[in-house]
Image: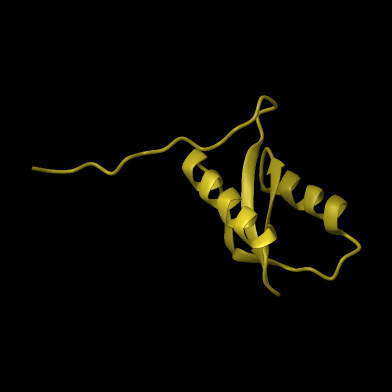
Length: 80
């Protein structure tokens, strides 16, 4: 009997933007809503342009609903 891998839809908001999740090279993590990678980079510059934070692009990915839920839960445990 062959098992098929479950396919989970990517998380998308009403503006058609995906939730990009990523880690910083120096540690920590964040997310940005953007329609594509080009918009992600411009939004990253707008939000964090004056900081010395660097994105670890090996960790950059579009979130699924369950992935975002666990990401938020981990953030809650670290921050609170």
